[in-house]
Image (cartoon, rainbow, N blue to C red):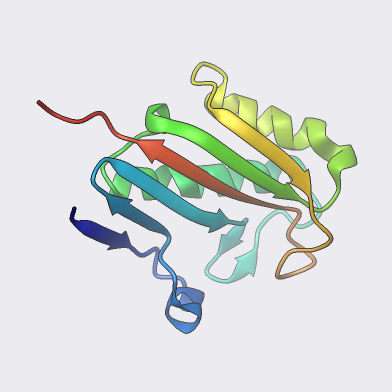
Length: 130
């Protein structure tokens, strides 16, 4: 099957060796995504806004790869403070309330920058055209 890598243009993609998203056939995997805009932390200290920002970036990557949020079957949320689950969850619900993908939220000790509160991955499966 054909593999297509999608870049967001982030500086770290080339340095670390990853793509924002990878599509093979009808499966799209979106890399862990944080609230970063041009390598600047967005909404520092605000779990809800960081989650919304990361999910909007994921949506953009999916569109670039030929999918939509409706094709998402799983999300994974890595959070630095699980006691704020309602903030992360409220933002996730705004994007996925009617879609309802399988999801995981787990607390981690830290992310790559201590100002990031959440990192999100997504898997999408695009319907095969007959």
